[in-house]
Length: 189
Image (cartoon, rainbow, N blue to C red; front, top):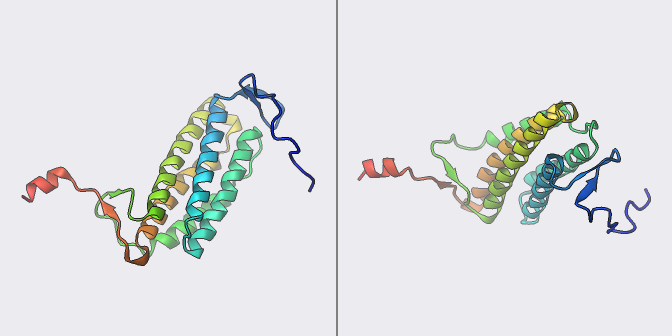
């Protein structure tokens, strides 16, 4: 494969537009570009999480997710192209089921935290939800150009990130941070 970019700046975006893979130019603040930006932010945060030395099994899952997020960004940059499939969603569900099997049932709401890795994973979950909302907005505007599997993928990914955060919080004897319901706290006093 040859070089994709020999020069980083092109000046073509100086007018507030950017190019899509099909040659169209769109405003940089369009819903499509905003959605691509959310996916890019999420992928970057996934890289920060992986760089925090997570266990090998979680590293493998998150690295695979990064590749899928890059593919999703490509889908959005090339309207009509689809890279994510039902198999991508199924793979996430299988990983989610595997990770969730060892966790105790939830009895309280969990606050983001527990460890730097768990907190970063919770932040990634929140960014994933934003990306999902943006993609849903785009799908309502351009339904024929948005892959239905991509919406399912982001929905499952946020669940996977929640369960992964629970795992990361428990590493090395750590704990999750539970929300304290003020009404329940008052009734126990």
